[in-house]
Length: 191
Ligand SMILES: NC(=O)C1=CN([C@@H]2O[C@H](COP(=O)(O)OP(=O)(O)OC[C@H]3O[C@@H](n4cnc5c(N)ncnc54)[C@H](O)[C@@H]3O)[C@@H](O)[C@H]2O)C=CC1
Ligand SMILES: CCCCC/C=C\C=C\C(=O)C/C=C\C/C=C\CCCC(=O)O
Image: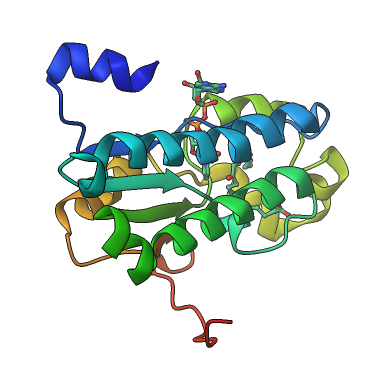
């Protein structure tokens, strides 16, 4: 497992976890749910097990990967979008004060727009998000087809989150229209 590998290579105390693994697969949606949601829950559980101050760990931080479609509807990839909403919920709930008091681990996530990676090249070709007719019928969509963030830009935001020990339960959106922005959520009393 990845935690054991890290301990053997870098030493016993894991303090930073970046959970970037994810897939976009609307056809094999069970797999999409398994990798994106179940995978993120497993990483969260393992992180707490290894990092929790209550368990002899040093605390630390976890950065999950949601998406802009983890905060907004996606017409073309609803299952993927739902899994990214789940990752946002997981981040916010483990990033509450009560959880932090118990474990001493900070949880935040990034919500990027389209990033220039294999995921985009595969899905842009397959038109999972943008079927051929949608692309040819919309000037607005063409903007997305030709604009991608670099992975380095996203990595910089992840590094900033790791360096920040004040932020917990927060989402950093990286979007074409608004740049890098901390998402403001409505304040709803806890039930
Ligand atoms: N590329 C994009 O436009 C955007 C990507 N994201 C998210 O960023 C993250 C990274 O995606 P990309 O680099 O773009 O995709 P990618 O397809 O280029 O890379 C995904 C990585 O996840 C790994 N992975 C997949 N299933 C796994 C599993 N079961 N166990 C361990 N590793 C596994 C793959 O080996 C690969 O290295 C994902 O969570 C994705 O949902 C979020 C917003 C936009
Ligand atoms: C032409 C861009 C295709 C990108 C598809 C691949 C991966 C996307 C991963 C995401 O997490 C989504 C990121 C950005 C999507 C941009 C706009 C989505 C709006 C359209 C929609 O889904 O309804």
